[in-house]
Length: 261
Image (cartoon, rainbow, N blue to C red; front, top):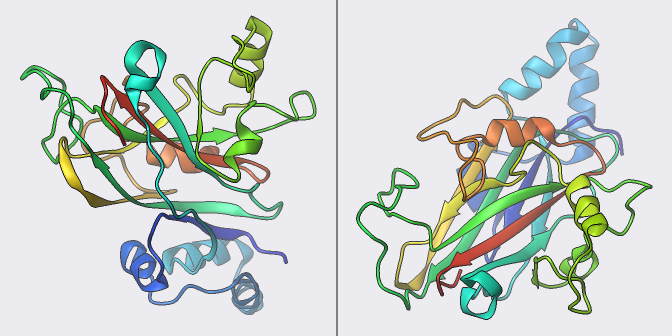
């Protein structure tokens, strides 16, 4: 069904539309058909260039909703270099006529805190005040092509379950330089091609709820770092603007020094 403005929301262990409406400030989440009907009504009485302005101002967007339930674990002790990256979820392809305006992530997670706390001079990640992200989350855009239809090698498995993301193939062999280049080619954006979402509170046994909402026109908040080791920080607007029909979004859970996410 034809539509142009839409919202992608991720919902991990959250089951109600009410929570999503609260997070994005929408009283009502329309269907694709309802957006199209309203667009046609506005187009009949106003100039075409005003239609998108009105719809965006009202946040009258259809929604693409992706959800995964069940526990996923990123345990750095089980991976070389004491660093683990797990793809917890990957979306289907963005529909052909969609024009993304916002992305919402709702996540429940915890850090088991088996290792000592980070040193006092560890870099502060965000306004919450906790330091040195031993376990955190990143987002990635995957844009497959005719040249690389089956890349990255973990993508197929990630559509059904959380899977490790590493420099080895499905059979455990080291990726060749050509294979590494192919995987890099399907990842969209400037290096490091990953965007920082949020971190766990260290050594907290109970799950915390994290909400990250990126708008197409939102300004960067807090610390902005294009080269952060935890992914591109404070640049959610950039992420939304890069998304195109056919893209997939991968949600990555990461851990270092024995932490779990």
